[in-house]
Image (cartoon, rainbow, N blue to C red; front, side):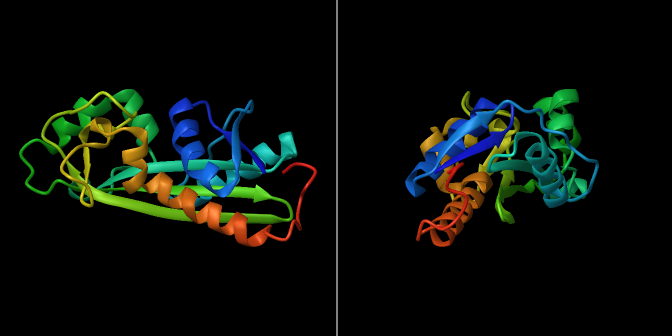
Length: 195
């Protein structure tokens, strides 16, 4: 089974591929730009981007939209995480949290899948804490300042991809997707010309 991933982020491709290969899914980067609508909902953003990409590519595909929701900042940056990372980065978030005792945050992921005749959404989260300073060189985005509560105190950026996938929002949503694909297409029913 092959699915296109609508992204320019090779880290996302690597993380999702490691999870989905356990379900017999080969993920490849689809050469289509992800078009994002403005919304407070990751699910709306992901599904609309998937629909727009499908209208061009006409192959089974997925879109991941993720965000970091920081409790002390009222859920900011949330769906604006990518833009926030590009503009103020990790250091900007740490400055906003300076002196605040509440460091709780959750990463949320919404994966929209279009596998005709189906459109499906999978949502998962990983909660934890924002560190006082960046740690680690792995991962991407806000990984150097996020420690999952299920982990051993290391940030996502201090973990290997395999270790991060044990706890990450994206990997959890990808496992839901994998289970759905396995169950839905286990009898070979479905869009076999693309899968």
